[in-house]
Image (cartoon, rainbow, N blue to C red; front, side, top):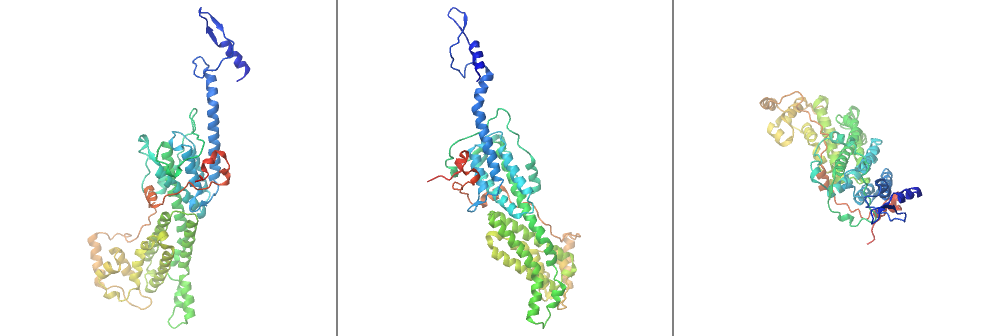
Length: 473
């Protein structure tokens, strides 16, 4: 405070004598912060300075955190470091418990900018899917809704596009007079943090983080679809030149070369699947999400191949059935090598095309009854689909016939009775929805031990982040 202010204050502090007269007391005064006679403006100046220092320090720490996570800071074992330090900082700063804060918005913006710049880079997308899903798991086990915000729960099983629309909603900035929480010292018993009653910004952050998990998941899945789609078009019909090379009496080397040419497109798909799996594993994407991706990819393969088969008569031949059957065996081998941990039930998603191909390559079709076909050979196919395949089938290898006229007539009767003989009712639809919820992620992922995750150099030596350092036992 300037000397002039002290002078003005000494003149303005008046006391009343016992006789009732006022006189100026120019003796040094001890400032009473609770005195009603103290000028309000000066009181606020004195009071704000320590708090401003705290707020400025907190803002600096937030800026450093954002700068840190904007970089690719890797993994500690199988744990994404960015997710772990974000969670530690939010707990330490008590950010989940405040009504207004910008830190959540900054984190969301950082994730958004990273993935928007790298929509075709599956390595970066997998890195952020790993971080976002891990952070979401930590929030799921930490946050509980307060009474006023209990209605802001995560939405189940909506498409990523719908839920992602919420991500563009920004948090309000810190208004004047609202303090940022700042806590010094080490965070104790971090791995035993009890549930926190979260305020609206924290719950909205969790919802936006959920949207990003869904968005990134969908981007990776769709990138793989785009990569294998051109190959799928080549996998439904055998190349004529290679097929013609597989002639009876040809040398083994000639037949092997022709067989290798036939299977090349399928091996291209297998290579794409393997490359994607390696990328996901390298970035420690939770196996639960990896299984979901490949389950949906195999469902996509099933839809594309099956619909192409039913729409193109040239594909419904005996020799083409053998070609597709050999290709499906390549996919089965891939699932086996990937193991159930990552492939899950992906092979079961191919049941429509597998059963349709089984019908094309089976011998003595005229002797098969409708019961044997519909219940034994192709139980998952509808009558419309069976009718379509049966009437389009042709044998370019042995000259055999399709099912008997009686079976065809029975199919027509069944379709009439079911009143389902609609033009394209035999086609399958590709399901691009998000096949999991936050609860599914929480239940499927193992608990994360984060107390021994070492922070990156950019913040390790900063005293404001000392709580991130692993605790000595």
